[in-house]
Amino acid sequence: MATKMLLAGDLGATNTRLAFYSTEKGLFQPINESTLENKDFKSFDDLFENFLNQHQVAFSGICLGIAGPVINNTVNITNLGWDIDGEELKERYNLQGVWLLNDLKALSYAVLNLPDEECEVIRSGKKVENASIALIAPGTGLGEGFLIWDGEKYLAVSTEGGHTDFGPTNEMQENLVGYLHKKGIRVSYERVCSGIGIPNLYEFLKDEGYAEEPDWLRDEIAQAEDMPPVIIGAALDEKKDCEICNMTADLFVEILGAEAGNLALKTLAQGGIFIGGGIPPRILPWFKEEKFLNSIDSKDPHKDLMSSIPIKVILNPIANLIGAAFYGLQELK
Image (cartoon, one colour):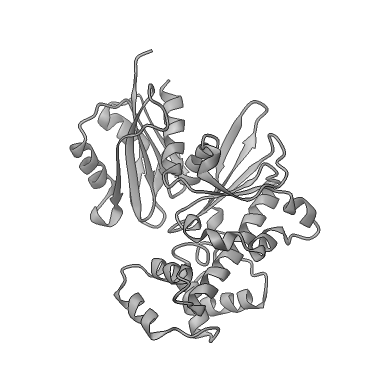
């Protein structure tokens, strides 16, 4: 069988990763992998042509994992506003096929292929063979999806669950909802559990008097292009001992755990919960704390069932790209 080349991509709200994969070399040997900042381009076409002009490679198909709902092989990237049409790309470049996947669908296919060492085990649990698997991924936004067994193989299902209404689980979270409502913000899980959501948590804790903002931190935030890395960095720095940043991380992980548990309960994910996205690998210590597991498991009357579910954090930073490559290479063969 002749070797074919696939152009695979992972398109988020902030960055886009693109690489070529061959049917001969497979998933773990990308060619000309590049990460591009979306803010440097006016449109997807602008970004895509820039990449192709730099890498003169003949390819037979495109598979993209994209942060947005895919409908009839078209998508509008939710937090970016770019439109992509798979059939138009196929005709423009005269390709065998173009496959657009929701980013969580791409991540689902990566989960089926990642080696064990590329995930951090938070809880071993008791995995049930061929049971559903839940995936939740906080990055710029909050992605959710799951895998179900069809009797022969796993099928990936994407959702827009990150945009569902946030359900507070304690008094502080109830106050958070009231605070954001007063600001005119619809309180979805994404608005309190993602890169978009971290500033909302921080401002709530500051404005409602839960913790004070140190002068040095206010200055760092004022000078930064993006608030979340400053907050996360300060929370991880033991020398800074920043109460408001620690509380922000605590609240973030507590909400993430509760929603991961919601997703696992709805899909009966006894095959495990996988946590992806760009934020979790950076705050791994918080996932080792008991309150994170408690926020997942506190689903009376099913606490025993929930506490048996394995939990892993995905460490591979290009997992979505690998998942898109897996799907596309299967289609090209």
